[in-house]
Length: 140
Image 1 (tube, rainbow, N blue to C red):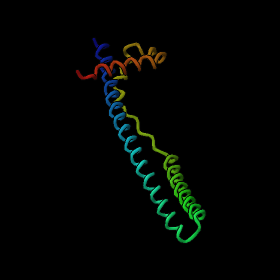
Image 2: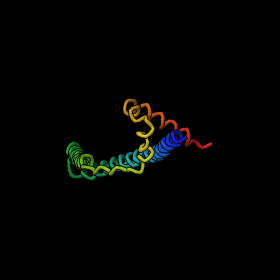
Image 3: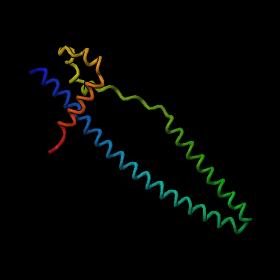
């Protein structure tokens, strides 16, 4: 009976993981949709800015030079955005501390005599626990 209780605790931790993954998936979908919207609006605004700059410069110089100046301005803006993005992506992120409370259901596995089974077949056992947790978390 104790073995079943421990396996149920392991499956419940899989259910919590499944709920967290669903929430993260929804959040990611919303962030991607908003990023696409902001990108489209920004591209339209940048195009309007380019046309306004071109028409302002065409009054004082030839059209070819005005187009060149607008293109160089856009290249400078693109280079600045690239430098900021590169710095942001390459910054070192601190690793989160281990949450030992989340691993509590796994602490009794050595007492059950299946510790070696987990070592040899870790992926299969964890996938089975994850699927069991997803099935337990479904709302009817």
